[in-house]
Structure formats: C-alpha cells, structure tokens
Image (cartoon, rainbow, N blue to C red; front, side, top):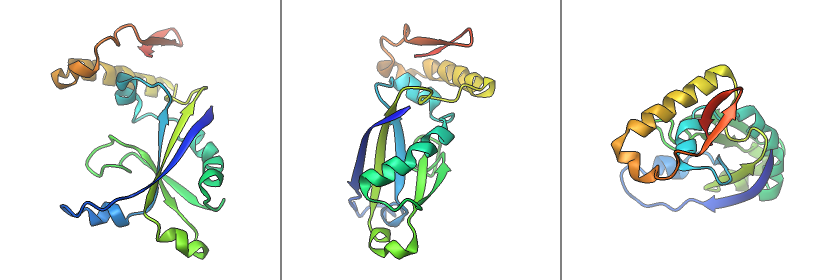
Length: 162
C-alpha cells in the first residue's frame, strides 16, 4: 500500500447547532482508497485495515509537519458521532508542540494498492457481503449504484465488491 495524496484542511466554524464540539475537537485523519466505488466504500467502511493505515501515519505526519510521536487512536465514529459512516484516527499532538494543539484541522489521506480497501479475514468478508446486500436493497441508494453490478472482486474464491 502507498500514500498517493495527503491534504491538511483547516476547519471552518459554521456557528450552528453545537458545532463547537467538532470545531474544537482533536485533529482527525481520514483514509480513502483511490478510485473506490460508492458501493465499495459503503460496504468496507467498518472493516478497514487499520493496522495497515497506522503503518503509514509516520509518512503522513512528515508531509504535514506533525511530530513523529503524535499518537493516533482509531475510531469508527471519528467523523460522525451517531454512526460508523466516517471512520478515522483521532490525533493527539504532544504538549510540547502547543501551537499545533490549537490548530483546528483534519487530514485526508488517499491510499492505493495492496489490501488498502478492506480486511480480508473471513469475518470481514462476511461483513462486506452482508453490507453489499443491504446497500443494494436500499431504494434511497439506487441512483448511486448504477453500473456497479459488474464491479466484483474475487477473494479466496468468493465474489466481493470491486
């Protein structure tokens, strides 16, 4: 797996409904897979290879100017407290870098190659299959899934989304 893009985005306060919690919260790092389909994202978001993502964090830290000893804690609810729709890492910057601790930013990392999309354990693959079925049955998602029927990937002899 390799990192193809890293963006550091400053948060903008919208001043609506308790936005201060998100605005003043810890920086977060969100990972996405290059050229991933909507169906793949919906099905794989809860079984991401977090150990693999964690292994490239030092490279991400260097690219955006964070210290190497920045701590990262994976959360399935990093971007949304209600559901696991936007998993990511909460970043804890060491106290000696106080100017960075006051920064209100998030990091968006794009990766590709290897097993960057999802875990390939039997449990993860079963979760993916169940998610694909439920997503395809959801009528509100139908407009986003046009043309993805043929986008399957064969892993360990079973068909999965591609």
